[in-house]
Image (tube, rainbow, N blue to C red):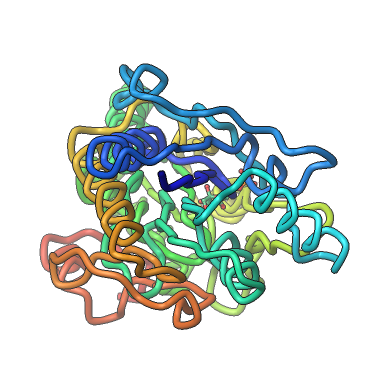
Length: 353
Ligand code: F6P
């Protein structure tokens, strides 16, 4: 029978277990394959020794709704860092009898997957990120869950902001893309939404807060971690697979608070939501999308279509060559309809009036 490995790489994301479950069930049911779960991302294959366990029907039952990944993941393990690491990784795959490997990860993991596939290991990739910023894939699982989490947080901040007559700033994840801030900002009724795609004017933001203070007492500002003021420096750094010590900066909510407070009479408070956005159970939407992605990966394997990544384009599942997976970020386009909606209903995007 076929022997297929599966691993999750990079930052975790709600829905990873749903993908693992769908890949495993699809392969078990449709071709009786043996599925080998690899622990802690590429690290479990790279070693020193392989860290794996077989996945059967029982090991993937009951995990659909669980956040995180039952296999564990890692940002750090990169078998392409040295030739010795790459060779050891491939030797372990060979010794395990893996005919193919499913890699569930972001663009960093796909770059590694591509490198290993060029060295002869057949791979199928499944894109994941809460940021929804993968080039060529219009929706990634985990995003809907992150938006739901941030929306709930904004709602909670609304009531305390109102009680105190404060300006509340909430910072979301998303790296260089503003999808989470934009959708959760709209869903949570934020008054100001600041995105990495549109540099904000601090005086325009202050003006919105002062105008609202006349009427509604409080203001809710939702800011993506990659946002910056006009003329300011971007503080967020992308995670790079080759960096020995990947650091995510951010803290833009505190920078905004410091700039805003002297311009206002009311109190300003900042909340950085952080990794709470990546935790917990996936929403029903993400469970469905992740299940479709996982099943699609299994179909690619059974058709022998390797070295490709599953995608969603124009609402349809498909795949693209790993060599065509573009390293980079799918930002919110400046003509996106949701930006127009925001402006038209009076949500400020931090632009000068
Ligand atoms: O890409 C997903 C993401 O959660 C980003 O939104 C965030 O900037 C980054 O990962 C955080 O990475 P880490 O978990 O390494 O701090």
